[in-house]
Length: 258
Image (tube, rainbow, N blue to C red; front, side):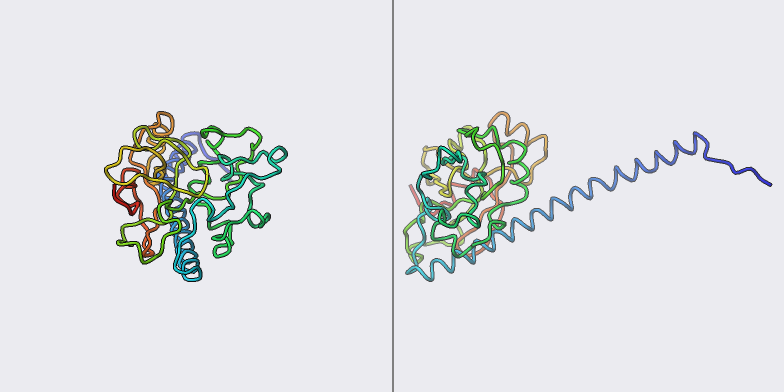
């Protein structure tokens, strides 16, 4: 009777090497597939926001909502001392979940009514990792249960749909950063109003985000030094089209001239 022989050390090393090689090939592909799936979900959110915007405008005399009071009522919660709410942390405060606390909702929420559509998975991951260091963070709001990541073009508030001359080049909703960008952005995500100065202006206010289509090393540099390293933002235009755009594109797409 033959004695059963196990693997030799060399054979085991060869098998381990083959497995490691396969993993080195498969893991990047899986990472790319996951990133692509997240991008599709973000684009789906943009589509939901477009449909909600169209319905709102049609049912409100062809008028856009005020950006500050679109998704949320723009007031300070009287329970501020107990739940730690403030303007700067509203976007990640579990106590500001509109599905649970409908009394906080602005007029636009009625047409959307799904919190999941408010959050891009890419932004959600960043928020849970780095959200606690965003400017003016309130330590009384430790949980990063992201409620929204999209902001409305401030310049559209109260305007009639027919007043917009170039819908395909005027954004209505876009993403913002949790960090500022030197020379481009002086403020970060804090409410649903995205206030970008028109092209040619030297004013620095809000701007598009810069965390899509960027490597981890670039993202770390960008976040740590507040510089712009080619990251992009999801941007929805009034004609229903959506694309990725850079913070430098913000002034071109705000819909107003200097």
